[in-house]
Length: 140
Image (cartoon, rainbow, N blue to C red; front, side, top):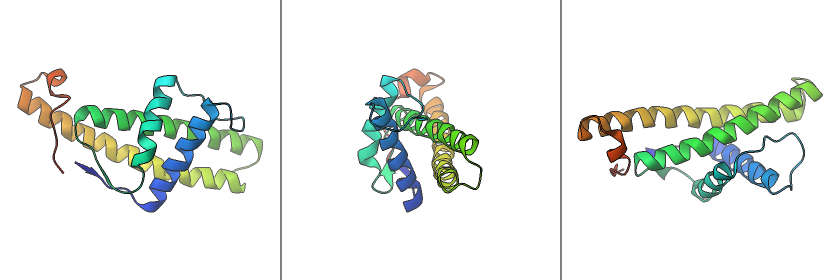
């Protein structure tokens, strides 16, 4: 299945993903939410894919991408909240984070819908044994 993303969504996910990874390496400004090591690894695996629309080949792949995008959304929301508290809602950084969060959250919503569809197909194919269907390929 293909996950369609526009330029703004890709830019928001890439820049926020890089910020999360940098924060984990201790190279970022304060205020970023520290993601667990497994989450950082998933984000690092996602970053090279953020060049345009990309394929989600299996339910397992969808879950990995969804987890990475979920962590990015959590980080963006935390940084947006912190910026609003430190400054005000109209502050330039708060507005930028708001739009980045919105674009990233839109992708997360599409991933959730895709996951529901994939789970339904896997359930139909496997007769209710989703653990056996996590690697069933989904063509584009």
